[in-house]
Length: 201
Image 1 (cartoon, rainbow, N blue to C red):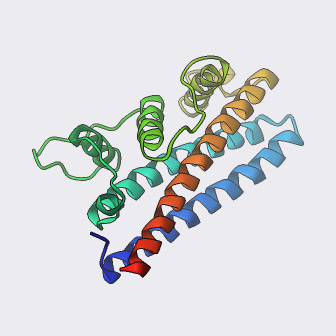
Image 2 (cartoon, rainbow, N blue to C red):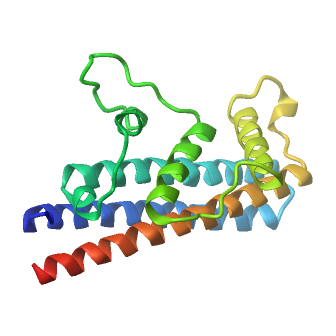
Image 3 (cartoon, rainbow, N blue to C red):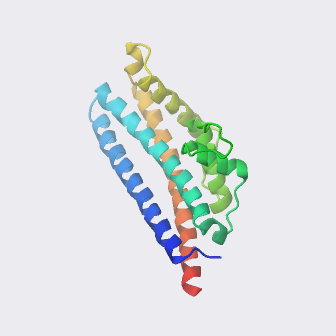
């Protein structure tokens, strides 16, 4: 059963908002990357690291919302997307949505959140070429620690970022960004299939 015209319109509106969010976050990332590359100023380095993880967390929240919207508005059923109740609960918790059992939402940390979204994406859209082993994943984990250290400093030295740490953040950014681009391309391709089904209905 395909979504109604009203559901399809609302889905398009929400998806457009998601794209706008990503465009703004990506622009921030590019601008701060340029500033950080052109200077050794640690202020610009910290701003760059924050923008990388604003992009990471923004895309994670956006994909959570994208999946839940697809469930709410009928697209997931039409596309044959199957999610477990546990997955749906985790996605809802990440968006701080009220729980039916009255308990407080349990927010996932960055690394398990990435694993959840990537696992769902690979099941729905095929390989995203994001492996949770080896150097790239280790770079990402270390970049998370670097971000956490600089936004929750305990001493002045915590605010300094070495050239090696910056290179590690760059590699983590690219690993994540390219994988999530595959996630989004898979989702959009599925939506195009849905639009085609609706036009034939």
